[in-house]
Image (cartoon, rainbow over all chains, first blue to last red; front, side, top):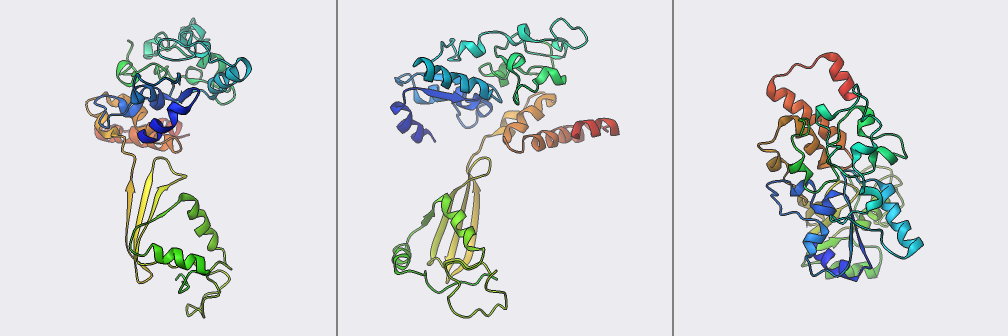
Amino acid sequence: MLSIAQEICPKAKAIIAIGNCASDGGLPAAAPNPTGAAGVQDALGSGLAVPVVNLPGCPPNPVNFVGVVANYLLQGTLPSLDADGRPTFAYGKEVHGQCPYREDNARCLFEAGCKGKETFNNCPSIKFNDGTSFPMQVGHPCIGCSEPDFWDTMTPFYRKS
Amino acid sequence: MIERPDEFPSDDRKEENSAHRAKDVIVPAGMLMALSACGGGGGTGSAAGGSSTGNDPATTPTLPTPADGRVTIDPVTRIEGHLRLETEIKDGQVASAWSSGMLFQGIETILKGRNPEDAWLFTQRLCGVCTYVHGETSVRCVENALGITVPSNARVSATS
């Protein structure tokens, strides 16, 4: 896998790392990272001259992937990225600020460990499965899956942080 | 029982066959589909002598006979992760076979020392296809380990 990436990636105009495993190593990279897993940027090192767009999330939202591609096709440039390499059009706002239940005491899941205040993504706005739903809509707190190393930084998931 | 022709059907295939005699044969993943397509009847080897199996030749799967040596299929696709299959062929028969999971994630190691409430979220990431089954099984493992008896209503709502 690494040798394929080392051969192919330097020839690309840009690399789109879809999902946590491609972005930062994801679950296999959770402590103690028994396999030495790493995201594309880390695996290829700082010498890589090709820009990497990270689309973290477990799962990542396909709408955001299409957004990156459409941005490139229409404007010829990559979208603006934050410090973690994430497009700001998708990961620019915290989840809590977009959550329709943030002022609904009966449905706000902050006390149940919701990580919406520490997580930047657009899940409540565009939702998943063609706009059907997102975690808090079905009563489950956000686990912070689009933040780097969230398996270690956001756990335990069901405790208020 | 699978009816096997003595040789590959064409001379070209025969040469390819002998070239592989003393070494491992790597079968590309697409070949799997080609091989399974032969099983539908009327395949490449269906004219190779009389069948003594008593099966209808039209429905008996026929496959080309590999030479002695190893046939390796790596990766086996359409599954989550990577699988490697190896078969050792002797006298036209599979003498031995091995399967290997080639994508070790180490989730069991990662789970050690963590809050059992979180375990199912880790475990279900084993597979992007059968995600839910791994999650549900992990929940049951924790319930079992802690001696928790789950009320019927909870069990139904968790599995619906």
